[in-house]
Image 1: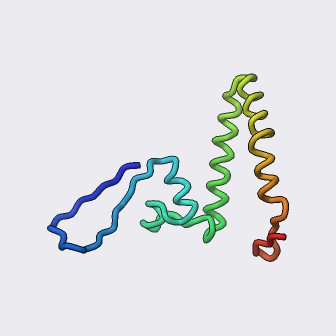
Image 2: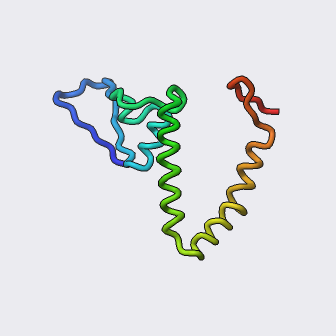
Image 3: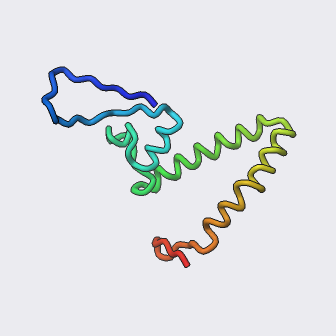
Length: 110
């Protein structure tokens, strides 16, 4: 994370200013999905919650990147990655979503 601060005048005691933060490219994509990235502020993209088309475009791009990564893996890398997903990730996803579903676009937790 990089912080930048620049003003062209002297600040008065107690005066508030907005700090802009550079989160670098990987986290910036997450910020854009949530609606508060640099491109969102400039009106260049919309959050996944507001714009279904933006969400689908990002999902297809990420899927393509994952496919490329998988295709570049050696067999042993693929084995260990799959083992990690099945033993470490999948049980946590299942536990977090077992009693959760959507009805009429509303989250229902039972």
